Image (cartoon, rainbow, N blue to C red):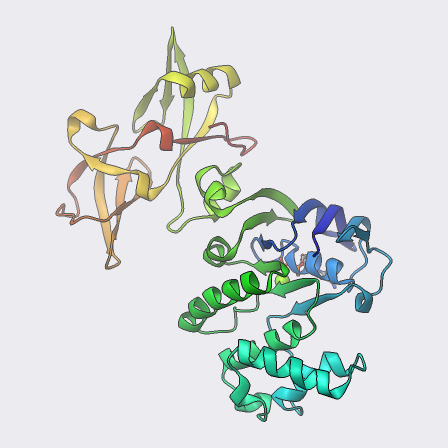
Length: 361
Ligand SMILES: Nc1ncnc2c1ncn2[C@@H]1O[C@H](COP(=O)(O)OP(=O)(O)O)[C@@H](O)[C@H]1O
Ligand SMILES: [Mg+2]
């Protein structure tokens, strides 16, 4: 039973602020994913939790205990790295049992625990092999086994799937999530892959330049991104962004994007009028746009390119200087060069302040 709580965690390397005032909590048994581009401080956060880095400011709690001054070996966390870092000269059995042998646990108990973990991970038939006789997926399971066998309070995983080929990665994604659920061990998982984050996490913490951008369950992150960075980072193809200006005319509220003007009504209009920021960015997801007849159309564009993906087709529509991506599931007969009207429900519209990047709607 252990939550992990970070309060105002800050870590500098010389002039680089790798982690900048991050506060986030992984609840007991929760699967928290730290998501962000390379260099945003994910690994440094994990290393601070493990005790491999000393924070410059802030606190790390595991359970209810402040662990800032606790050496790594006393924190009861197990870390799984991107490079599995198996001992090449040891068998799989010896690799998995290594952390237990370091603890002077009786041999009979070690054997029992290794066997149990090997069965759980379906690697019981590999116990006599050396790491170089394993496939990438098998080596990855062994590394997981070595972490699991310790029965730690917390798992820390640093891009553990990124060395696997695409198919195996998708398979292991589900396996790992299921395993974490069954074991009920609080897990903090680092990745730069938004799909991995969305599919595995109970809760995602998005980071950029060492700063926390948003913490939310995957569906909330997707439907209500709190700023332009999160909105653009989550989703593939990403959300369409179009610059526009707020225009207030008598009682009416418009968003003028040059190539088209949207008339807004109801609460959306109220909120924008109240906020008063004039330089805005419209955001709309590719699946929220549909092709409609002129009477229902909000935006006129020209089909620029079609990208068939099997179950769906991504259609790039030229609107002024922008290419708007539209996700079409049904058969789409329109040809490149055709003029098309597009519509979307107003409640799917996102509006951001261009200057601050913050979501207004
Ligand atoms: N030991 C170190 N010495 C100097 N700079 C470091 C060190 N570790 C990380 N950094 C820097 O801190 C920032 C965050 O790194 P890291 O936590 O590895 O990011 P991520 O895991 O998100 O890719 C980067 O700018 C990186 O270059
Ligand atoms: Mg890293």
